[in-house]
View (tube, helix red, strand yellow):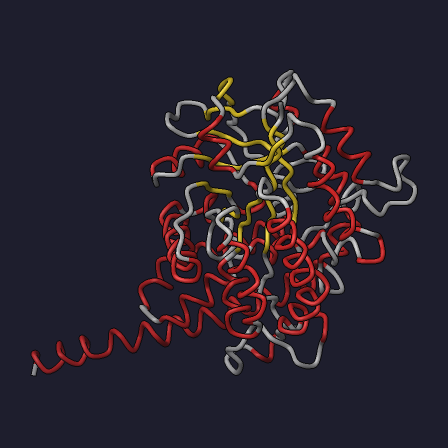
Length: 415
């Protein structure tokens, strides 16, 4: 009997405006452009809230009231929560209503949806703690299961997450790490005790997230009945089917007129027609099922693109340069003790900035173009690096101000 574990990722970055060379030293507001709709974060979030978050949350709340067996889980980035708390409180309230049912689990992640796990263990831990504190403040719960940015995972990350006390980690069911094994069981990380892995069934998840409205797909149109038949084929060959996807699947990536909301509303009913099907949250899956084997992941995986590696963020020279530069600033940034400088620096760590710089033009090039608000990856890189140059000036001015009193004291002592 496979249990169904739904997990939805909710994240909206603060996109950098068209920050030009002549703005360096003159403009310290990096993340909003009233003149360009594609880079106006508030307008983008308003559109996605109207098309996706509000109608999807209303649908889920109805399902939770209609089906007591229904469960799901969310990972809400801190950057996303900041924005809805400030500009769209009705969206925050709709998520709070879901959590108040007691059948919606919130997961932990890095506050800024960053790649810090790959570059700075200290910063990684700090961002996880910041995120969990915000979740506690807004929802009154403490996350027990961790999902890293873009499901990025390896053995070292597993060990770090385990050291923070989490009981489970969500990541991608990549074929090359599973070999002959199925993603429909729980596993244990290599050399780490007390933590279980939940692996995404990417074939079934992507049928909804990417192929639902693809008219050239041989299975189009996808109905709830057809999808449930595919799930039922796993009876006897799995204990939990992890359906993980971006929440924007509902209404934004798959528009309302595709029938995606009708599909979502019908799915629990059709799944529960089979007496052996039920729903679990990640924590419930961890408590119910044993780890069936050990998974060794020495090389980093993710859920991005067909490669399911780091190439979405680290496949060219401009991405590597931008990443090297922003993380090299850590020591000086923290030394300023300036809250706005530190906050801006952390916002610049969001993985989206580097995704926009991707120059892949093969299997996943169109996907990158769809998500990027910039005319080209190079435009994204230029704006990002100009911002970093401005940040450097701000940091130096701030550090000079901190050192000045000490310098003056030494001078007075000499006199």
